[in-house]
Image (cartoon, rainbow, N blue to C red):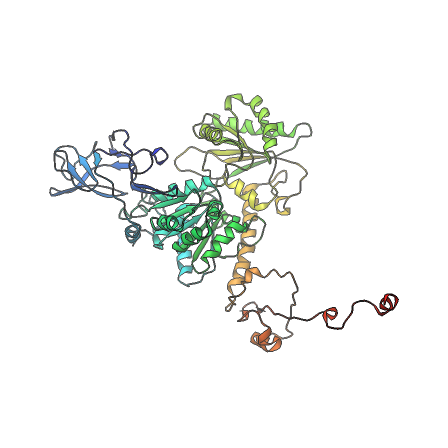
Amino acid sequence: MAVTVAPFSEMPGEGVAVGDADKQSNKGWQSPDVWARTDKFENNPVRQLLVPKSIFSAASGSEQGLFVENEYGRWPAVAAGAVDRPDHHAVLPLGTKPGDGLTRASWRGEPKVVAPSEVLASFDTALSYHAESGSRSGLRRPQLGAVHAVLGYWTTQRRTPATVVMPTGTGKTETMLALLIAGQIERLLVLVPSDALRDQIADKFVGLGVLQEKRIVSNAAQRPNVGQVQHRFTEVKAAKAFARACNVIVATPQVLNQSAPEALEALLDECSTLFVDEAHHVAARDWSAIRSAFEQKHVVQFTATPFREDGRHLQGRIVYAFPLREAQKDNYFSKIDYTSVIDFDNLDRAVAEQSLDRLREDIKQGYNHVMMARVNSIPRTLEVLPIYQELAPDLQPVRVYSGMGIRAKKEALAALKDGTSRVVICVNMLGEGYDLPALKVAAVHDPQKSLGVTLQFIGRFTRTSTTDNYGDASTFVARTDMDIDPRLRTLYAEDADWNLILRDLTESTVDAQQEISDFESNFTSLPEEVTLQSLLPKMSTVVYRTPKSTWDPTQIVDFFGEDNLLTQPIGINAKDGVAWCVVENRQSVRWGNEGYSCVPPEVQANYG
């Protein structure tokens, strides 16, 4: 049986689908994707890619045993006419010998699932720690630094979540993949904010991204079993079976929290490590609830902006932060041209005209660019769309918003990807989870009001590519009187240089969060009852300042009395000279005493 495989989305249920015949190439035999499994547990799929789509250039081995081998692995082979093997193997042209070039071949036999435990064992020493240099493939500087920083932090056995700050475009997902392999993580849960990002991240893990293609990971490493939680789990048995079939689970907190509590607990218990992607979302209660299940396990938070959407600290220790200035220097973060648009007649039309002029100029210069017009509501898309339809009917403007039908949304996104449409009007779409490097022109009709969201938005346009023809990014922002984060005022100034301001804004906010992280990490003793990050007292707080530089914070116990302390031991930061504790002090109110009346005597006399 010759086996080729259709894309996962086209697979009819489980197993392997039969597709077109294998293609030929003057470089070798072009093998299709071959899937080892597509199992489902309560309609939640688990996939494993046995042979990634790739080219095999020559046969290897000996007369007694032929093989086909490339950067993705090594598989047994036989020449046509020989007895088929019982396992999954390649069938080569008649008379093929070791060293012969390949232009055609086919797969036979049932692809065998590589068990999660075998996959895990294959990760041993599979990762190369070489840095990318010139034509030599390797991990990028930020990727290599993040991997070393997290692995080093894990050796301390601390359970405070580790935060990794990497600017957009520096290769965050490949960093996760490298950590999966280098850390030989038993079972990883990756938490993401949207369905689109769940699908995108899962596809990366299925094929190990570009790590094997660039030989950063050896071909001895097997592709992991990757599960996606697309539907709620109702049964503990199914949740456990699903988890145990996986090396990696990718899910959104929304779907996880819809599961039956017992099923969710069973699934989370099976996971050894948690990665939180786009970690600024952890302010949401459903994110925090899942993260709390990993208090005694390793947690790594990945973000480009190390603060939550509400501006607060991420409640983790920043173990690595790659500066934006370095990302700019290494061309991971493209230059961006900012134009402030002022018009007292029709501001929306002025923004559209200037943005479209830039897009047309970019296309004229041979750049495959796409433009996004950003508004703050669905009704606003209806106001802006007719302007673009009038000014650029040839660019086929489309609109995308969260409430539109699935079919209509797919058609609009497909038109953007294939170049049929060059303009999209959207509210908060095409952000996290939508990978479209061609997005290079931004028409901001309604600016964001917070720094974190703005930096994430800008990051969509500053991605660079070594394989496609993209130029610098351009942003046109409508100047309106608005209530925004004060830090954004310099960004939206008329003649602002975003390349400098973005760098300064990002570094100042990262430094501020790093200072908080360092302060927290300097506490050598902390109670288990209350975490330092939860000290947002709503009752009363007393702060004492010692008159001398020498002090013994342990005497706090004698001062307040051991029975009155709710937290033991005392939290002590000797470096910064800070100690903290929570004290319980109960006093009865006077009017609560027996025989005491809160009614004044003169009133008692009048009313008896």
